[in-house]
Image 1 (cartoon, rainbow, N blue to C red):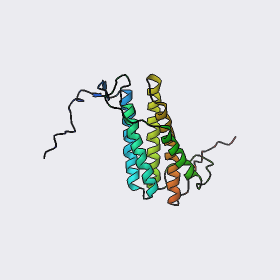
Image 2 (cartoon, rainbow, N blue to C red):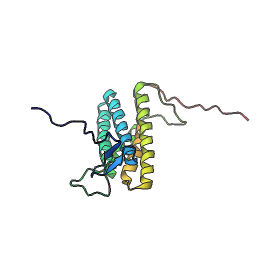
Image 3 (tube, rainbow, N blue to C red):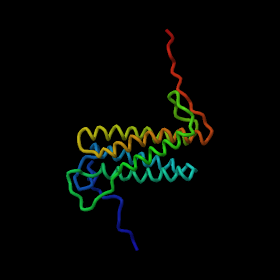
Length: 190
């Protein structure tokens, strides 16, 4: 049996794409930029998950990937169109789960007294890349929200996710016995 589904549609060859609901927009539209950045983040998190050996962390990262797809679908939906079927939405519980994970990791991590530099282990570095892509996504979503409707829970979730990724980077350093590398700014003496 042959698969008739094709990945290419040719409908975007002139620089446009469709939002969920059918509205055609340019590929640099704010919504496309927002969910495209979350898609990039999701790919990096998949790479991170593939390399993490801790079963619990792998499970949490998989749930984050599921939640990011939910966020992407929300951002890809034209809010002025009525859909034939409902899409999932992020809920407050998704934010609480991230907060719970952050708090659990912070219980045994050393106190943080300065900014830290990314690095020390490939997993730590990759986690910081995830964090910075998440922050970029957050900035794009906030800009989008200043111009059109964006679910407040989605914004809150992405903000908390970047916090989670920062603490996860420290957790991965801790697991691999890599000390935090504090930033030591050159301070001019007066």
